[in-house]
Amino acid sequence: MMRNLTCCFLILGLLFIISCRDANSVVAEKTQDSMQSNELNRIGSETGLFFPVESKVIHFSAPERFVDPVWVAKVLMPASSYEVFQEAVLGKTTDNTVYHGALADSTSWWKPTDVVLKKQYLADRQTFVNVVVSKDAEEFAVYIECVVH
Image (cartoon, rainbow, N blue to C red; front, top):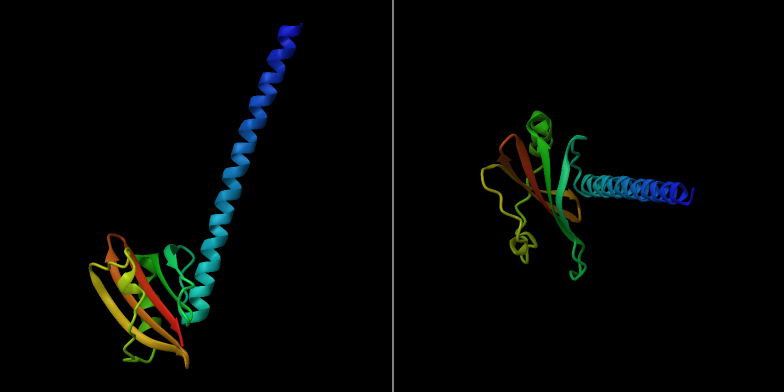
């Protein structure tokens, strides 16, 4: 009887541990999805560029050491969505502002290889945006630098 009771408690304990672990992984996944959504929303609202749902923010860096808000991001998007995005970028009025002290230059992951598009524009009167797009296998990598003056 005592042995059966001990086995029963062990099984219940294992089930509890497994269910807690699964719940934690679901919470972590939802938190990551929420961060992705927040970063994509910020990118969209500050640059005027919007990404398809399947897009993923791979890197996002917004150091607080700069006086003016500045951030860089790398977003992957499926090739099937690129044409609409490309049209939106090309529709922006080009701005040839030379931005010194570029965060992109000091970012280790900012390494576009097969560049298919480059564009600089003002999202509004105070927000400079630099976009570089490279083709990576079946996806496009969109590198974005945003500076608010």
